[in-house]
Length: 222
Ligand code: GAR
Image 1 (cartoon, protein in one colour):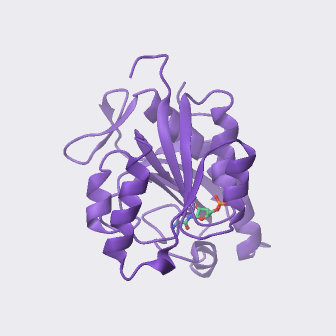
Image 2 (tube, rainbow, N blue to C red):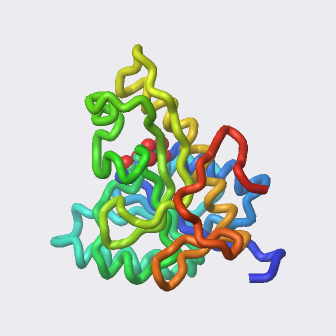
């Protein structure tokens, strides 16, 4: 990609799409990407309206119309590949992906997860952080591999847990951070600064990351 070209991106959602909105907003300013399509596995979700309002093509591929995970993911690959993305961004896409799907997009598939991975993989992360008595919680962006919520970490944002927190209050503060770190990771990738190498290590500016970058309310690197 030449410096003036924009990275084609497809975003997958299942719900409200606030992370999608953050990406859309930044694509209008400093993110060198073109969102080619937003695809949802659930019809009628608000994220689709956000995409339409921004003039982005949308598609629904309803998982309930398929007999099994394999046939759904095969259809999803076909749909996504029609848009020729350089990056596929899972933004609240609440499905477990087949190994074939993950392999197909190896090195160009991002996920956002609402915990400080490797803590609290899976669902109900905010309640689980509270139940565990964690003093720090947060969100992570990672490359997707076959291990659920287990792929190499790119960047995390931390949120202190307050004594008065319940799961909703904590989720709200984590979400604010999510909206900052997802566009950041996408920007690094779009600028070809971020890569997953053949050994499964994340490289930023040609140096292996010893661990995830930690986001501190300002962008850690230029
Ligand atoms: C976000 O909190 C995201 O981290 C989470 O779903 C929410 C989607 O919100 N993703 C997962 O839990 C994936 N395992 P949004 O639709 O408002 O962006």
